[in-house]
Length: 410
Ligand SMILES: Cc1cc2nc3c(=O)[nH]c(=O)nc-3n(C[C@H](O)[C@H](O)[C@H](O)COP(=O)(O)OP(=O)(O)OC[C@H]3O[C@@H](n4cnc5c(N)ncnc54)[C@H](O)[C@@H]3O)c2cc1C
Image (tube, rainbow, N blue to C red; front, side, top):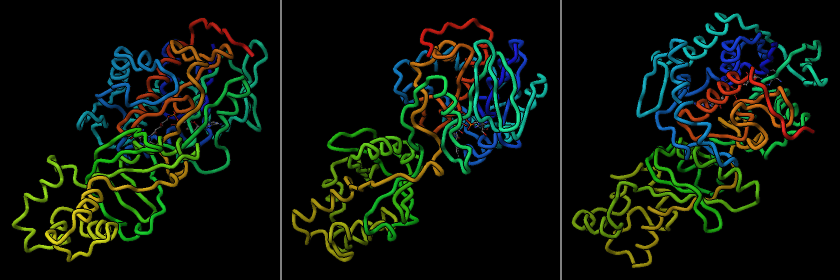
């Protein structure tokens, strides 16, 4: 059985290895001059390839039964797979990295296995379209047409890509009758339009932050914020960004609510009153500088129209209320996200209802399989996008020789 894997990224390499281990004759077609270019950029070059906490809440999809894909059995099989190709994890707070701390270790281990199994590789092969004549698939570049019995489409999403040949995988899926759920950038920086941004640019601080629209709060995260001259960044912002992208595309108004004092457990009034003696001779600005970055203190005081030298005891009730709200319920309007080029992952894609989730074979076209980011699954920061790439690649590759059932041909 001749199997073509289109795209030599995380999910494609995994699918190819598992298909070959089943005895299929596998060829990987990759448009770049080497495989796994994106893998090398993951985890800041360290490749956060897995997470111990595989709670389903870290994955997002319009499909409701992700649990049967991210099952305990599949998790175990992926950890065994990495062990089988010689990867030893370095685990930090549940986040898995290769023990070398280098993404190259993951890519090289996959490529050594690809070569050991004698999987064919064709580089600089930009697949333009795929045809099916009722018996065979014809995978076409501008110059060549290759014939296969089965095809696994693993061309990834739209995130972090430059150039013209982007998104062809979605067109190929559409040509076989698949729908594509709207595509949005996620794990990306958020843009605001307030006047003080240049004054807080460069500040890093710990905070809790939630995203809301029209009175509904969608998600809350705790962690380090990076305040910038365009808006806001940081891992916790990345994890909220999918909601911003979706809501803004729907023309909704979007806000972040930031608590800059997440370590204050008592009511904020009690916290301030607890420093009564200090506040009798230290101005609000001087006091806050002991707690928060000085650039941020100036922005926050400006936002509540207080001067740096204002004394706490001289504030009116209203002024205190404004100060407290600014510190623990700071509202930042969000008007956009940075584009796909800055994003780490794509929201949306091929709906999982259109594939058989036991095999990842298309329900529209017998012999056509999908894996990875092209599907409508995106994950939080923390190794979840690669986790899905490995698991889906493994399922597609392992089931390539199973006789498929198609119940919705076009
Ligand atoms: C900067 C950055 C950091 C990230 N860090 C992490 C992290 O630490 N942990 C994590 O879990 N996730 C991370 N991700 C996300 C993760 O890298 C992706 O979700 C994952 O690589 C998706 O795997 P994939 O196989 O679906 O697609 P990809 O890895 O993108 O592979 C797709 C492959 O298909 C090829 N291709 C596309 N179209 C064609 C065509 N028409 N013909 C031939 N070949 C084609 C591409 O060249 C590519 O090699 C990060 C992403 C970025 C951008």
